[in-house]
Image (cartoon, rainbow, N blue to C red):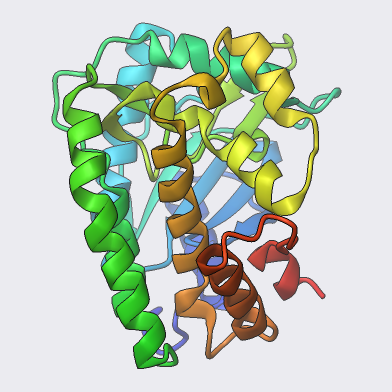
Length: 304
């Protein structure tokens, strides 16, 4: 079985999941696809497992990183999900790479922004692990997305790359002025789970790195500025004990976040209906410094 011909389709990922379940000798009869993005994430409730399969040949290092992090988080009792017990990881099937985690059944109430603030405060207090982690590099990430864009107009590419050039030295100077800590890298309520005991757990460590802790507090207020007020920023700030918008670095960090939100749509321009229009709206509103324009999440475009 090979995933190459199917380009990591849902069917190909389901086949990999079933193969892994057989190798682990667990029941996959009630398996359910939870997410289909950079990873195909399957819940196997009867087996008490969650399987995450990376959908890229170029991001395999992420799987090794999250497995190493998972082991560390278990050792220090971090507020995170746990790797499956007794499984040597990562697991490989015909070139596909996967990690296996303990299944956390959905438990009400769903975590909110206050839970995120409290959990991030505890996450940021953890000591850095002994093994190396990637360093926070928002400009490098943006450049990769910009380079992966056949449908990007030359003028827009030039503008985005010039934006990267302007921001990079300022962001590097800011990071150098701050103590390095664990940065989750994708801190939002969707990456929180509540277990049966009521404990809130972080998940999805693909973007976890070392860098300024402030980075994880930026998405909530930056998103509200572009998508509309939700109250999440106020809840997050109160629970964490710090309002990032009062930080002297806030304008710089907000701009870095907006670069990420604009560049994030670049690889989707030719393949996702509505992405080109949304990208144009975002870029024009940034260039015009117009905060009255409301953006739409790229993920919402794919569900229409």
